[in-house]
Image 1 (cartoon, rainbow, N blue to C red):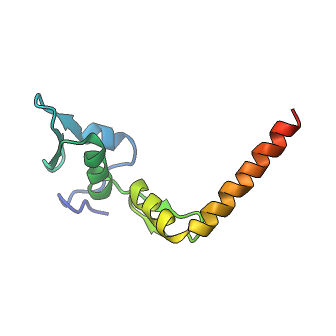
Image 2 (cartoon, rainbow, N blue to C red; image 1 turned 90 degrees about the vertical axis):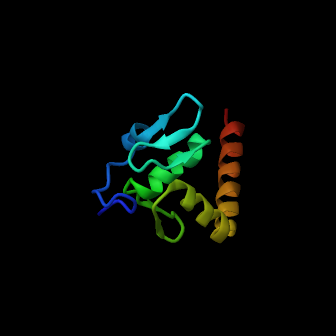
Length: 102
């Protein structure tokens, strides 16, 4: 797969996001791969993950594949509220039961 911005092959997930984030003396963050800049490190990391890293994040509820963790969170929050509530309820019950047996 090729990078959307530069046309070069995708870099590996994980280390590359940190490797591509640069910060100048004025506190602005910029992408070492394409020069995109942002005042927010988080926003620049999202840019790098979406544009330069081959990410494959799958939804645990419907198996939809997205390219960033942020997009996965948005997808789950928008499309799976009922499943999230059920999972939270089950986890709360399990924790309560475990604490009663201490």
